[in-house]
Length: 549
Image (cartoon, rainbow, N blue to C red; front, top):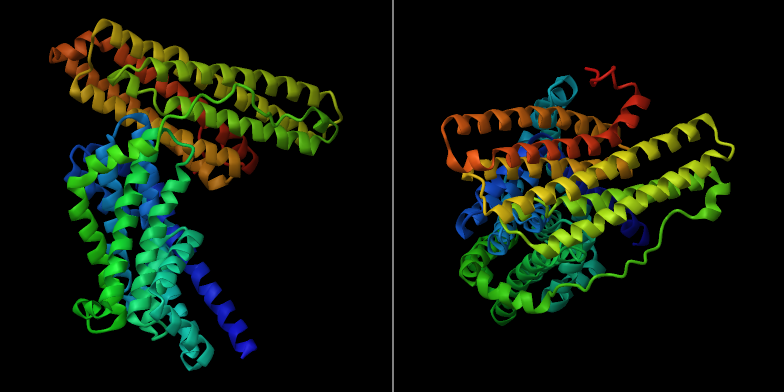
């Protein structure tokens, strides 16, 4: 019995690991091929609660993750491009989208696995263009999800003969509160409500879980899925946190209420399908659809409750611990690691400055402007200290590779400092000029600037990932995005000139500020992209000024 249990656990762990990786593979493909278009569509369709809900649903179906949509929403809210009400609607729509994805993946489409693998692998290996290559990644990920579900079913099949397992799972069927909490805990551990729900439904389909227990675990997965973005945004500004808390109240509270109904009348599941698996997966979809329909009118009231819970944090003390340990200079390897950690913190500070900057052009906020200025002082201090640290390190005996790495860190710090200066000195000053002169951009001009700012913010986030991981593929993507940003900037300038020729009064009044804003954002993008060049140069992926084919 012990050997069988170990064999089961190993097989189940492997199947679940494949499932999590396959879901991530699909999300990575979508992010690398379509993220810029997806972000633009999300922002532009988030004007009303209903359109925001629909946009969130579609985005979650593409990204295979309601959490990913929640994090995108947090970024939009922090930059002021999405209101809190629309943000909650986006996240609720994403929850519905993830339940639709679960329905699709549990439908009888496993016969498509060979075709998905063949087409996906061919596209990924043979395509040079980014989108077809990433489409191949998505198809392979989808095939692996279906294979993983089959593996979970095969791994759990022998357990139907185990009396011990039967006793434990029967207990879950009678103790629905424990099943509910276990479902939430497993979903938090997996960081994917889709993967968790797929696993629970597969268990139910194998006869391992009775309908009430499986339903309670799926409801728990909804609670766990609502907790994840709350935890991930704990350090964010108040508005994103209020959005996630509101979603938690609506989705998590709804799951608890339905659990109570399930405890009172477990036979009600019979209306949702003829088999246990179908009842449970239909409950997941009906629950999230019901939450959306009930919650949309309640969003403003729940947000007011969240405002009472999530308040502005007091300014943290200016004293902070630096990663630049002076005692570590005697060990060049450790010292370079210290400098790299401080460089990453410097990059995060720049990103924190960039996010709310464009919002100042629409609603001038002296407190936000002052915070950006304080962050710039911090960036300047970090830049100065990193340069001194690297200079002292160069006085020690370094290998050729260590000397090259030290120079790279110093150069990246220079570029990040310039990016911070562009935000603090140029963008904030331009926003203040708009405010003091009582000017406004044309609707189309503001939409274009918002799109461009979001593109640069997205590239800055990617640059931080490159800085942390050193991944070659991400570095390549970052430089490719620089080329696309350059093309987007040219399109923006052409569209702006067209509005000037048409005598658009708002465009005429703000023409200089519009063009200076675009130039500043383009320079910020150039600065953050620099983090990719040392990685690409080491890999031989650079010509003189361009990526190799």
